[in-house]
Length: 395
Image (cartoon, rainbow, N blue to C red; front, side, top):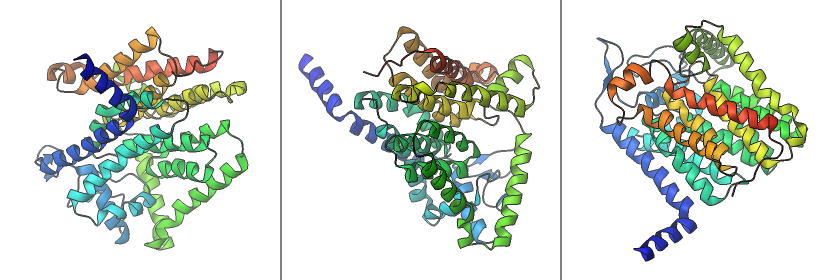
């Protein structure tokens, strides 16, 4: 038995990232099979049934609606439920998958989400491969939840982490491409531009950022007229303005509303959160410390969700990525271990079938319990950024 344990330990020590890579690929395929084999869902009482992987269908048909010259921000009940809320550029890019049969396109979409995060974590400096493997395993079940909903959150998390890893190598063209593309998927990706405060070559960073912003703004002209593109941006703006006044999700604002019946302005809360996020950047002397920069990356990832008024359960792969980077980029402490375990239990496991449905539906969901540990750990990261003299390196 001891020999077997030593052999397993040796394999893990030498091939941990390869093993985890297989795990991420497997959950991508499994989630696709689940979606393809599941029966249709009815999203509103008395409504028509829609295919289970509805979010993928929204992305897929956004490309066809774009090239057909239609307003992609309207409802298309014959094709899918709910609205498309991303940029015209993302609709165009999704054409790379839209033409494929769903059985292939859905698997590839899941793989893009899961492997983008895997690759981003793999490229992070300052963390050993073993630590990276445990970090990715910590995020594995949350990634599965996200891709079961065929959403883009794994891709969002991966793009931000990749942007940081590439900036560390001063590969600013590719790094800014990642941030700008994340912005054209979901606008809150723009918050990752704060990471460039810590690097030289601000002129190159600004130049490449402007180039990619203009490129993605205009690339839909390949398939639509300038007039139609202008109309689409107006329609997108109206949709986002209406969305701003819609329901509150698993966020700081959601907890304020569900716990204390607070009706504070979403803009005020978001602005307060942004000010808090910026405050640690006054510690210019820490910019040269890689472990401090990793803390800021973790802070940005968590912030993107907990201050997003529309945050849903599948978006928490972004939070878990931030929590994992925070924990595994430094030496473990008893407090941090406890917080890590509580995060896994309250974020990932709290919405699983292991928790009785009465508890999930009567307590965890109504009171936004999934958001609690993200907020707690973000506060701890913020404190560490401000007051820790020197970050302890990961081991």
